[in-house]
Image (cartoon, rainbow, N blue to C red; front, top):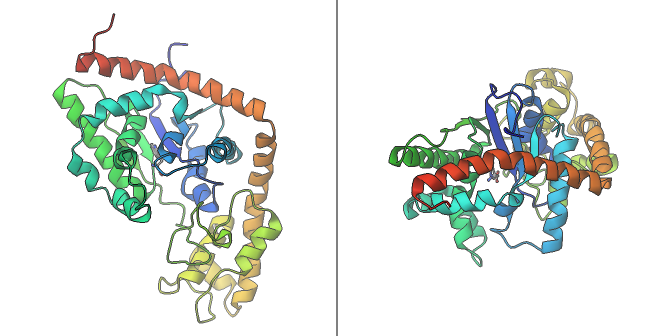
Length: 337
Ligand code: TRP
């Protein structure tokens, strides 16, 4: 095996998600649905970012389980290990190795300016570790190792991607062309899904209130109950309005599940109350999740097969990762016998 992919004409995509809990419907609409849709047009690397996740203290057994859960959920959402390279980040030592080199190209000031670092330091004041500080350098290494052209990320990762581009250019200018300078690929399709309990904040896989999030393995009854209990605003009209984030969020969920736009939804439910609308949203979302959940449980049940897929993915990924790292080591002047 000389190359990671058979068809080298296609542009390269890389993306990852941290294994910190079961993924939510927000991950499906914001990332995974698009990952699946891009597999024919691009050569895609999709990874479970376990190295990133230990910047916040993890329970080892839980991390081990979450890593496999996350990989299984990628497959359940349509990532096809025959088309894309699906792997676990820590299986490739090159991610850590390149991070070390790129750390020496990154200014303290650059990392200090990252808004996510500032937010996370505020939220984890008891454990502001150096790994959290260089988190974006690890992310840059993920991307640059595979010479990715495009990186599908949410708005919250845009600043990290900008740093990645700067590092690539800095390294290239200092030595010679080494890295592809990647572009962000921000998908606008999916509406942003907010917490069902506090629609002013994003739905999260690690929310302490499990009623706030719809997980991709929730059963029908759970989904319906969560939607019925969702916080709504005062007022009673089904109308999209940013000053009424509760009802607007339910409309986004309905849009995602049915493809009907806001205007169509307003027409369909003109004169109806929140109660009726919630029932319709609950039905539609349950229908969307059902096949994902079923596939998830069937993939997750066969751990041996899942591990084989991930072993195969790591082997394929390592072809490109080793190639890039070899180039980098040579350029910086490490002796190679
Ligand atoms: N930091 C990303 C997040 O939390 C996850 C991630 C790690 C990633 N490495 C990446 C995303 C490389 C895109 C490319 O969302």
